[in-house]
Length: 183
Image (cartoon, rainbow, N blue to C red; front, side, top):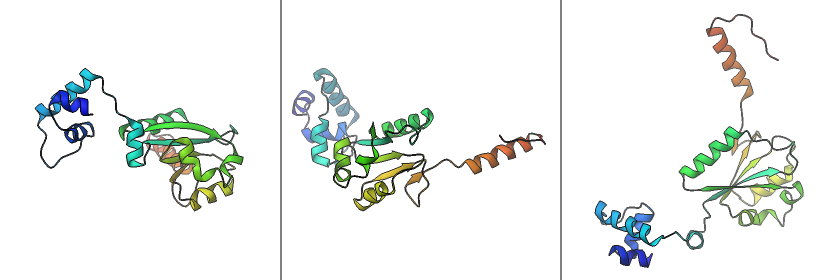
């Protein structure tokens, strides 16, 4: 950043404000921003994400946890695309990992799961038979998690097949269909 600041003729904080798209006490002119971006391009500057992680304590990453038992985790491609696009829009990335029930119920493993995955939070995709101790460990350790495809009191995202069936039937009736079957 100091090389970029020298090349652009600005201070290091100005480079930081431009890179992070943050406001400073003084308005940074468009011409100054352009000089900073030009210096970044000329020098081939790349951000040091390790330094940012050390400073903020955040990885900028969400970990998608899938079971090693393929029958317990299912993620449609459209849902995965949606997760990826939303994280990307927030400047985050996604890591996907498959973990055994033994690891996810191990009181020694679970507290370090975020560090192990280098993630700020978990997306847990279990469609059935998730071990109850896993949920208890994650909650008791205050690990930020959202459950996918599992109905829970909170922090979950699930499809609503009943409402989908109702909406589809109403649509067909409105279109003039009188004999509707479900199989």
